[in-house]
Image (cartoon, rainbow, N blue to C red):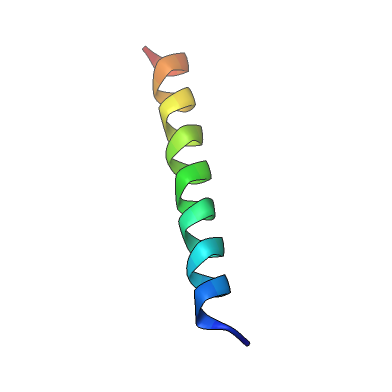
Length: 29
């Protein structure tokens, strides 16, 4: 298993979680 691929997956997942958190914050305001 390639570590570079794993790093890319983690970074993409982190960005998705951050955008989801931003959306939730906007909804709650």
